[in-house]
Picture 1 (cartoon, helix red, strand yellow):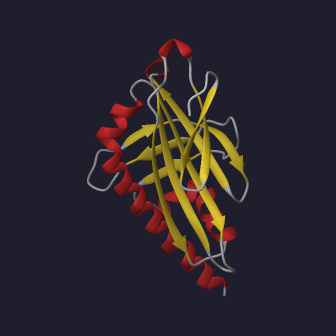
Picture 2 (tube, helix red, strand yellow):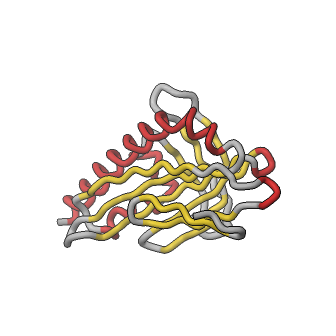
Length: 175
């Protein structure tokens, strides 16, 4: 599947483009993907997930602040329950208003390249699916994935459940 200029990772129902440099050969690529069905309309879920400054009110796993716009640097603090909090300043690399946004963090001169994404997929009337994913690239991507994927998966699942609760509560209050 790898080509000289780009490759594609397929995970469930989406594709993520992957660029790699020849001098390092084929870079390790791993994807962590979670999803949850939410009994609230997609615009309500987007309202919750798109308000970075409001995350602190409902999200026990990640806090975020900043402007959600391509090219903007935001602040994110990741602290899984019972774990040590880690702060970083990723750059928003993609935004499709009402549907998806992704940020990217590069560490150690590009040897570790992480892309985190959030996607809201409308389903039946009044329902949607929320997807959260992380793509691990670079020479150290596979190693970080193998050491951190279980803890990250747990944190993503907790965040997904709290997002579901918050969005469904807001939808009920508006009904």
